[in-house]
Image 1 (cartoon, rainbow, N blue to C red):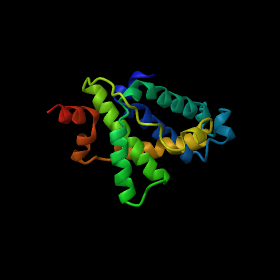
Image 2 (cartoon, helix red, strand yellow):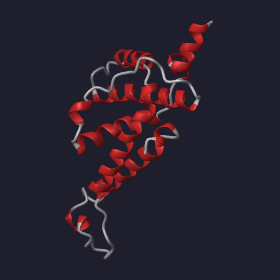
Image 3 (cartoon, helix red, strand yellow):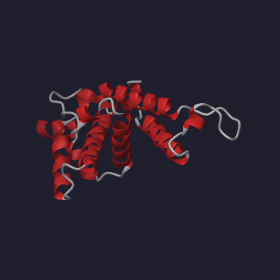
Image 4 (spheres, one colour):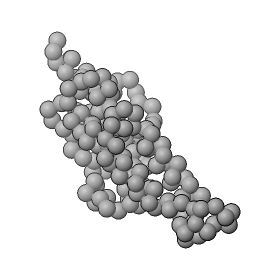
Length: 168
């Protein structure tokens, strides 16, 4: 669902978090739930299937903002993460990715034209590909970082603000 990221990306992320919480509460969706014979007599859900589907939906949304992924935002946040001593950590990488996504979604919503240069994918992207557990853990880190309030000066590094600043 490519349009979801550009039009409010927190929906799939919120659902992903809910699925993960449900999976933890059920002890990893044991075979009783997976096969539908839980103690309550209700049909169980295949959490792995739904989780995998949600991860795919989120990843399918990436092309919707790809052209808006600002290398300036990425570099600014990477510097801030390094200043906090979190460079090259999963949490630090997730902070950088979340900042890039926040700025990309804002630029797309504002109607800005996609920028020329595009920020590269987050560190470790190719290592997580095909590993549902690793991809889920990564998306949860990015979700937490994405939902965290951002300082107002982040807008200065967004593509539209940068372009407006260079035009004067």
